[in-house]
Length: 327
Image (cartoon, rainbow, N blue to C red):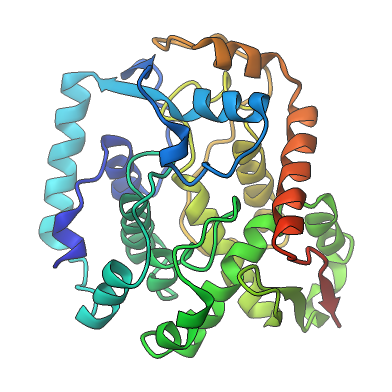
């Protein structure tokens, strides 16, 4: 089975793969609520509380129609790209492991979990070639932010035998840093030491899947955060960013992007024009009642609630969210 040819990317994903640029496609798409949407079929099935579930459903339950001319242009550009840009085949053993020993059946933010993984893999190959794109293909296999686990702990040694030690370490760390970025002290503690980051040896933290203590070197930490920069690309709304700017995922993406620039560690090509903070009414997008309610909640309060939710998810599985910078 070919990962490269069996997945059909959305138009939004094709655009970002082509250009390495995130774009607010307002005016080129029509966005409408999707009434027949089941949150429990997604990785957010474990999300609790009527209000958080209402807001998440409003975020995900959308259907997009593209301007035919714009869509045709992007399709043609992507076809031309694939004539010169080859996506390597994944090893049959690794594909077999993913398909037969892991559960990747849940839906993600836009389509299937596998579509999300393959998008990250292809984007990484093209726009973060310095390091293995397999990390992006396997980034959530040891856990998501919502306590869904595609792989059982007992299969970690099998995975280790299918990837390099560098890949295994980065894959193991990924779910932890996805959670740690919601902790206000994470970015700030590093920025507070900006003038002596050349002396930073690494960071100590806990792995999500089994709470085992881990360490990354400073170099590996910057690489890890660049993997996350690529990962967040796939959570951007297709259009009307100023309408949805209070979304905690978008807030974290902005914070990570600015953070990597501030410390001079942006390695991946992710061109991201940060939207103005002012709310703006959407263009060619019909908002559901949940979206209207969500837009009334101040961004700071939304982030506080998101951080609380992440902490609750970690508490439920005995995962420790503390970390230590090593000097």
